[in-house]
Length: 262
Image 1 (cartoon, rainbow, N blue to C red):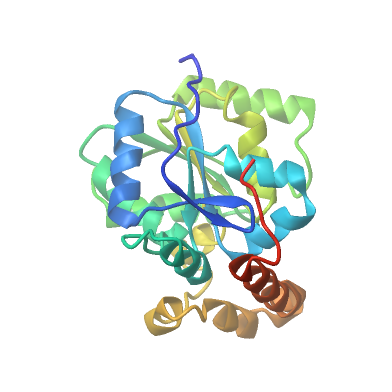
Image 2: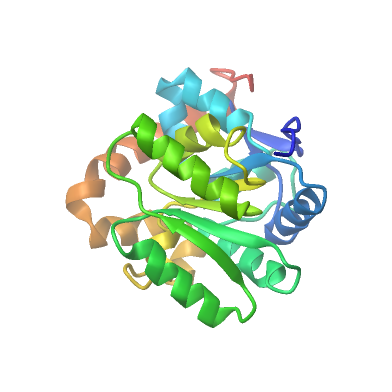
């Protein structure tokens, strides 16, 4: 197995003590391509308001985000914060878009993919759809985990499968913060190069869930669309976290409270 390399840092915007990579989709894909070429192991977190809010109450989770190879600005509020701090070329790097772009550029370069996550049947459906959409794409394996921590036997089975397949890219389709904790725990031991936590991208690209219209995505309103689609599960996340996020950001911008990226 390739020896794990130190995580590479890009310039980062400070969003409540979380270092959000000051990137756009093009520069993110370029960084990923360079890491794959040199077999530099690492993990990529796709982080918006939810992830930043979770990090406020959990220093260990905040450290996971800050140690990532990239922590992409998945939500428009993180982009706006970055631009306010002087990162004028910063744009949203949305998990589902990043997944498609990476699949597109890797299909002719021989890089292989592994899909981990989703409800039963989702990873398999996603594999079929991606391979149809991107001729030449190599999805070498899938794994649907249980809704609990892996047992020792399951861990060994996953490690054996990944060791046999040696994928270059390991996609993780769980929820935040579960997927980030999974990557932090396993990125150095599983025989894959780059790990990506892309959450709902599995359901979107497998055809199991609708995405918000582009105008809502571009104006920071995707949360409202998702809340309307799944209010029972998401009401607490958005109706509690969003106002609190705005309050904390106002305090940071006004200098009432300072946040350090540790």
